[in-house]
Each structure stands twice: as structure tokens, then as C-alpha cells.
Image 1 (cartoon, rainbow, N blue to C red):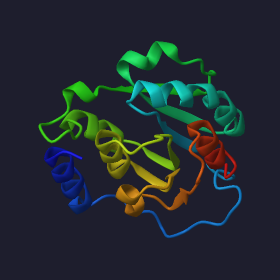
Image 2 (cartoon, helix red, strand yellow; image 1 turned 90 degrees about the vertical axis):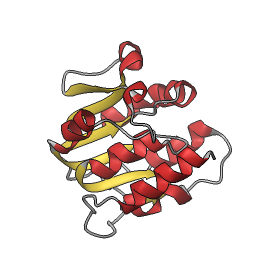
Image 3 (cartoon, rainbow, N blue to C red; image 1 turned 60 degrees about the horizontal axis):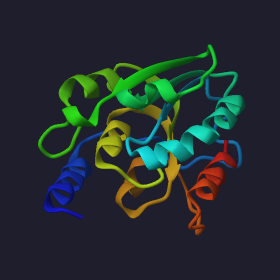
Length: 173
């Protein structure tokens, strides 16, 4: 990890964010969610894996109004249904520390969600900052030491296969 990334993670841990109200009951974390935010990874290799599983996630969230945050240049790769809205982000417009610019942060703070799903397979500073600033009652992601304090539900998987790790998260929806 570079010094810039270490500094960015440290600053992100100091930022005050909307912290969810404790742990949740399992197995269906998304059962009562009416508004859902899904944040897709900025890394293309991870995005390519996630987009194949996204239709299964959207089927499980069919009853909810879903907002998908996707990197601007990956937007055309998505196949979604009519109940989804798409918001774009662009990591090339990040601050010097790799954090989202003020306008992007203001935009993600502008709406409140019942559930936020971070589908990043590997933690990314830019995405973590979006998650930290998002207002959501419940935040769900794959477990990673850098992001432990940002989520209510962390799904652990020992599998080395990224698709299986993502499917483990899907089991809790």
C-alpha cells in the first residue's frame, strides 16, 4: 500500500459518517428495504465479475427502488430493469488523496437509503469514501480489515474465487 493510500485510509477513518444502528438479524438483511443503493467497484476486473451477478441481486431486490452507483465509463455495460436509477462516479476526478470530490460526496449524501450494498471485491479508497458518506440504515459488504467500521453486516468468505465470495454476500439478501 502506498503512503498516499495509507494517508487516505487514515483520513477516511477520522471522518464522521452516518453510522448504522448496530448489528442486524439474519438471514435476510434486505427483507424490509424499500430504497437500496448498490455501489459497483471502480476496478474493471472486479466490475466484470460483479456485473454477471448483478441481475440475481436485482431480482432479490425487485420490490425496492434501487440506485446503482457505477463508474462513468462502465455505465454502458449494465443491463438493468426499469425500477433502477443509475448514478455515475469518476475516480479520475478524485482529490489528491484519492477521495471523491466535493460534488460527488454532496450527491451521495443527498438521499437516504434503507440498505447499501458495496459490491467491491477488494477495498478501494474511493469507493470506501462513498460508502462512508452515504446515508443508509444498513450497510453490507464483504469483510476486509480496512473497512470493518463502515458496515453493519460484513460477509466473510475464505474462498479465493471472487465469484464465490460475492455469492456468499448474495446469500444474506
